[in-house]
Image (tube, rainbow, N blue to C red; front, side):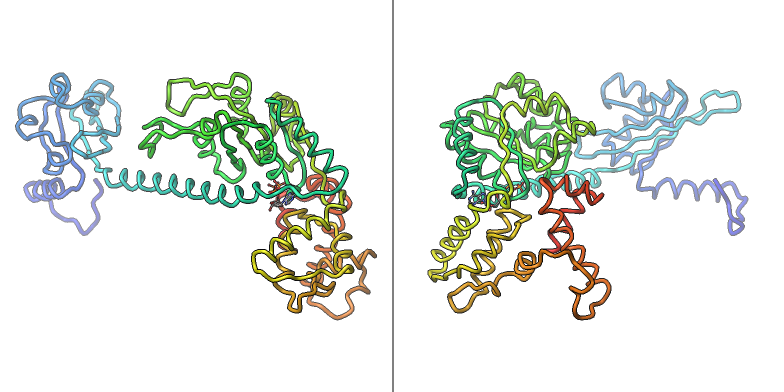
Length: 467
Ligand SMILES: Nc1ncnc2c1ncn2[C@@H]1O[C@H](COP(=O)(O)OP(=O)(O)OP(=O)(O)O)[C@@H](O)[C@H]1O
């Protein structure tokens, strides 16, 4: 106890009065016992929090209370036995949860004099934590449902193609659909990996559902419980048992999008599922057998990730038994007009208003390199449809970035900045053009990122912001 100069009382009674006031007004439960565990002093909060009656405290030591199973655990007894501070969380069964700490008080010969017990109410804290956990859970479920609605409708899209390469890919997909080995779909973002996975599922004739999960969109700590499910009480907030996506995909297909983002520890678990077809829910004992088709997809360079020890080699080999690489749109330009007409038709049906695209505009779209692939094409067609007022889509109604990038194939030079621009804007313009050009010259985003010596996520962001 530290006294300041304001405290000038030397009267023992006054001092005792003060200490007992502190004792009695404390929100924490306090109880002091001797070296045999007999209670010497306790306060009102102690009675309220522990639910143990004054009668018991008066007549039975903590050791006896433990023997008689009046309490299930006693920090005081532990402190008596070990002469060390002991702290634990206790559930008294009266709805109260507490953190109890027992501190031994020793004399100069290290003999035990007393034990001071402190009982802190954490019921409210616990309740808040549980609520937070539940909110997080609900949040994640909503996010997942939303994602499935968004992606579900995307992946249900009809497969539109005209190019020879896509004909071969679809034929391969039909053959692979009948096979139950894992399948890996590769290709840049927006090339149609989701759509193809869905197509393979419908072609497979499997009776179960097509379940999609984006491994990069779900926080690591939730991903495992999403995939494997959990039993009631498996972790704080697991108030009921829940089926995992592997179980939901039983007799169907599970589509693991962005497989490169699967955390390393989960990669081993996925490998086990691939090998023996068995899963166990978190906190569960039962092993369940599931039979499903696994399709994984990524736009990352998995081989490079294996070399960098970010992706397990054994899992890579297991997933890569069958694989299909969907080329970017710029390598199958014959598909561009078919896709433009398809999305234009959809807009016309939706808004019951026909709009025609002029040949020159179509030519510009066909020449454009589409770094965002079909996703970008779909957005451009939709935007242009809305922007066009007289029913005819002309070149100058296309986004300026597309007009410019197809017209300007000369390197960006100082001369191309004909009017003075703020430095920041000039740098941004150069950066954007440069990134577009580099993307057109490289096969994958990773290759481009490596050449530019930037992180792939930086490149993705810059590409998105530059649109
Ligand atoms: N062949 C196709 N015909 C019609 N629409 C397509 C085709 N391929 C893709 N799309 C559309 O393009 C968009 C992107 O497709 P999808 O989500 O399948 O790409 P992805 O390769 O899985 O992209 P990411 O790697 O970013 O997940 C979607 O809106 C999808 O409906």
